[in-house]
Length: 419
Image (cartoon, rainbow, N blue to C red; front, top):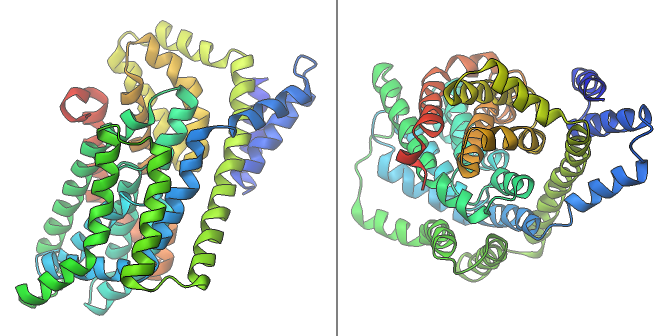
């Protein structure tokens, strides 16, 4: 059954079929070929997976991001960061990295980050004379910080599949996300200085900057509030998602006064459509995961690892390689839901904490988002910058080095960086 599932899914993926549809097709083929799996039981497994309270956080965090970054707030945030660091070497690129890090504390979606921040920053960087391919590369990589800094939609999905605490994953992702941010900013500075990229050379005027900072403070406060509420157990992640949406709506309507019915409707529809896609992937992945477990595929992986890999170090390396390859071809939500049931027994067998596994998986699959051939943020930022994907990939070298460095720390020195 496992072989048929992999074959049918592979055919669907090669045929450029949407991942959720390819997964459903593979599940149906496996069910039709076996008299051991009733179709109604498969449907029950699919529906049961989305009847989960933590999943309510996904649409609310997406709606929060759309409300916060779709109006004056997003523009004021970019203005503050530009005034603060835009004059340094690689400053415009560093603005993009910091913007993504702050936005990561709002939406939890790398794709939303790449679209929102890219549409604001890339035209500004091009007007400064910044190389468009490097702008696209910077934002393609930086957008993935979104899924490490809480809230994180992939972490919610991992917690759902592994029965791990969402709050523990959120807290553990903070330091790796900040390390990724610092590393990417250092890469921008180094490349900007070496290649003498143009920058905004205007002096920082503290009067206008202070007013600008005060105006943008609601955007800076929200990520801090989310982390405080989670860290000290004031509210659950789902409750925090609802509170953050309420906060974003009140700030947009009362302080910035740019939340009309049209923009609210657009934000709700956008969040609803994105959530529908994620839920379809969850249902399809649940069907595949249940079938693979029914066929004892995870047990086979554990047995193989124990027989052929003689140390936890080697097993972790194998897990990383498999996750990196999967992340290059499969959408992130589907990859999380497919790989978690396979790797959880393996992690338990070598004594790995499931929180470490969740962060390791998130970092791995984040790298896949800006790695060909199916890099979502890579394609989005390249399209916004109007450059070929190959040109963007050539500029990604320093960012890959930083990302692999953080991945190595998460994998082999988790006590140093996991909260």
